[in-house]
Image (cartoon, rainbow, N blue to C red):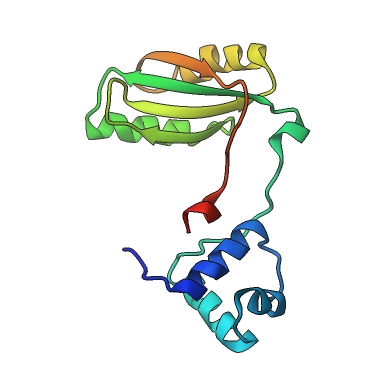
Length: 155
């Protein structure tokens, strides 16, 4: 269900997307409202599920996780039970950052983050290829992230 947002709601989301720890007072000042209506809007956005939570943004490169691969996955079976089994198994692998069911020549697209090519190769052989119903994979290695995590641009 989509929530209708006015310019103040969108301003709140843009500010929080870049600074989730901003105080209500500073947020109110940045969007041009007083504290009480800003706080009420923030509570409504949280209550409506538009804001689903707050978390620290961790730089994976500073943790040594600078190898990113995108993996096309083709399944042997695409009935609901097979998709559910694959979905449940893939959620258990922390190195897989994103998984999307795709309409196209393959079934899933995954974003995998590891320390290096050797670690990725092991992950592919031992974990990804053994996921339920996997028929085959194709890997594309990212050379550079040009744009990531910029939801404020869409608001």
